[in-house]
Length: 306
Image (cartoon, rainbow, N blue to C red):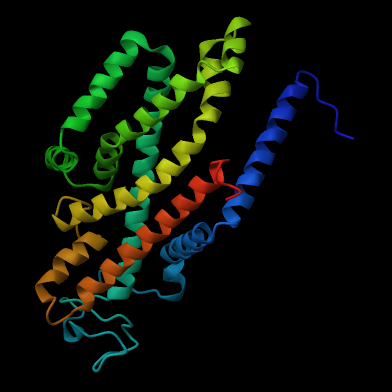
């Protein structure tokens, strides 16, 4: 027997909450049946856990230099040492701890930039698709301008003016990527706002803000979750590219892109300086893409039973 609703609380609200929880439970079960999604989720969880907790078991300063141990190879090669399991760079800095610290920076920039892009894109996409008319035209023309300007050139130009910092990098990457979310949301809203349940809410005088937040937004959330997962991977690649060019996170903070830039000079003599950071980028992007594919299948009812 279900608990009675408290005064002032509608039983409809509890039914909606139970339906939402049941839907997410089914989604998680569907995700659990996707081998790629499970593998990607486990790998990404390991990367996150390692990036956040490595200092507990490996308390090495990523900026500490030891010129006597410069260009030490990984421990499995001749001349290597377990004191530096993955070797050292040209300044004697430990490669393993720099890769782990770089994962923290790249993931933080990736997730934060996606949150900024999601926030701006969802808001503008909901407004554009729901209200239409001149509002839709203005927002979409601004989106066209953003899409017409090369992304990397726009990012480099803005960072050159604002200066190198993590905050500026997150802001620029996020605001440069809002168009993708806005167009996706707009397309979904255009079809959903003509559904019977939305028309019924309008007919009883429900406010537009309530319709957008309670009736339309939950129905466009699934494609946004999948898109955001994939865009995190793209943001990480862009951050690495900007750091490689010297326009990303400012030194001396270690990042994967800067490690590639510094190691390319020694690629013939110290292969680990380029190969290992590149492998870290590849595994991270692979885990996020696998998780995104699993989420896409789990959130699409047509694919759940395939």
